[in-house]
Length: 255
Image (cartoon, rainbow, N blue to C red; front, side, top):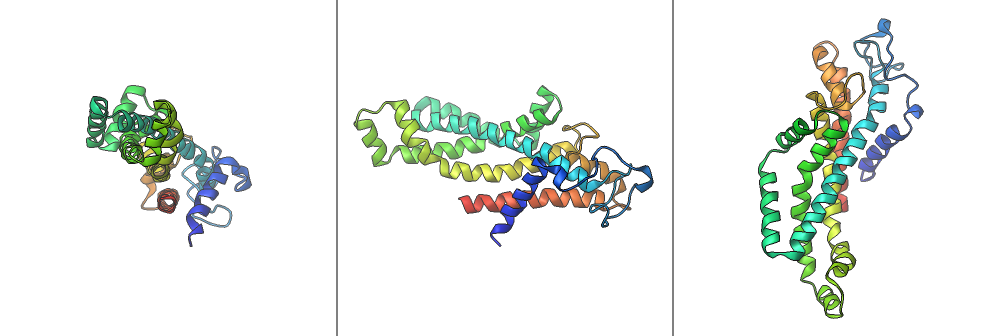
């Protein structure tokens, strides 16, 4: 079943890229006469309190959650790898300063750090993605630094310096490419973490504004009907869980 996590991610990506292939319903328009209907052949995930097809909202909402997660991972990957590369290659005072700052960031709970950034930037999908990305910089930086220190001590890197290679050239050609394996694996894991964090912040009301079909917001909208209409929270939540677990499994395979 090694193909299953890849299939889950591929399906969600197709949802985001071509939602019309999977549903013909409008995610924003509802039919009041069909409100709060359970899952059926006509409505796979049922309908919400205003008669909108929930499956259509989950499918169309995938683009917001996936794009936000990609932005978050990109921010953490680029900034964290850059800081780790500088700290691990320069060492000395620069290394101490960068790593102590990263230790401070790691000491703050990720959700609290993201909320702090959102307070400064304001709510919104893009700001939430940036906030989650900032929260992951420390993890990327520490891993990248450890890999850079390991690769920096190898014989072929010393030979590259001995043959007249410049500091920046050796870092770019030899150190960075041979340090990225574990960092890429962490990126896959952080993708799932970012999906979960963005959904959490959307659930708390800091993400997309209604009636945007964002996954966290969908779960939040259905919580008032949990006792009578379980599908409003359970099915979007199951999608989030499936994507997070699939990303974690893919990260293990890459590693």
